[in-house]
Image (tube, rainbow, N blue to C red; front, top):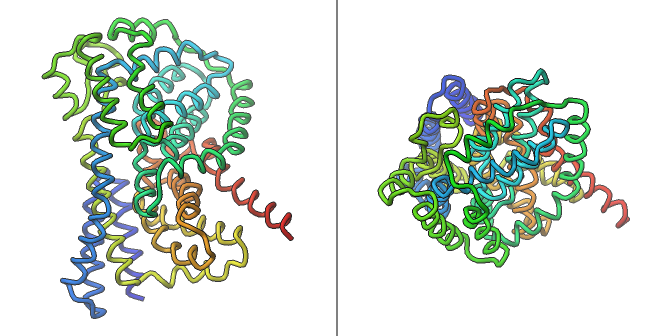
Length: 439
């Protein structure tokens, strides 16, 4: 009973922090303190609990390095003109009759390159929503397409923090995971594209194309060469080069372009790499083309550290083992996948962050997956096909709340983020079909 009260209190604290705009690490630390007190009363020694928390946090260190590098990469891609050029070329191919479809595809491509949903909605997403702001169509249509596209890369880009986190906690190779994810996402992605095409045809969006093109070309040197940092990531990732080395190579190429083509000084680049990029010129794009930097990843890193400490204590004390009893009743692979969906959705609702949801779900289902003779790669794929894409569908989870806020919207986008629920739905259907064929 005390555990149930703990879950309720923690959930309320997390929800209040999101509604009030309080940094979520504070309620997480409060919940962690309550949990330690509760377990102390149950007979666990504080020293043992602290050791479990530290052991859990240590698992996040390899992810933290990647997170900090991602912050630098995004800033350098800004100074090199890589992201602005992606926006520049992307805008030129958009037709008013296919705007919503284009919003999904462009967001998907940018997210695959930079691996972050927040970074995607903060760059191409803001540009797209501003372009559509003068139209009379329902803005949730555009926001839903942008957020869904942003999570294509958040799920299966080699630059994605969630993909790297899952690879670490399941002890799998990220490139192998990505290949498997691409296979399972083909049909849901195709159906999503079809849906956005149909919606686009009945909801054309008029926008001022020339204004955006002229502003970007005035601020940056726009040519195919500045896309080399992004192309390097694609090529090296395809060659299965270790992700940290991939990002370092991309940073070095971006540095050269930033200095010799875009004209930034070494001190300016260093400042942007640490604090994040921001245009010095007075332009309406100043609030659009910005972001990245090491400090942009500090809060995310703190969330990961506290989350893994939480998971370490929960795992070591086994206080949530009763939650996974449902999975033991699964008679088939499809039933097991459905159970993982339910636990993932509950974890996303309780944890309020994608990171907590991933860690809780993995901890609760890993033993059942072993009992069903599923290897770590299948576990990693199930996590990617469930909790990663379900988290943004919980209105108070920051995975969806932050992108919606950045795009000046609210949870009304959720019904139009097709890919996010098509992926687990069609994965479950395919498993059921396979079971019938095997009978």
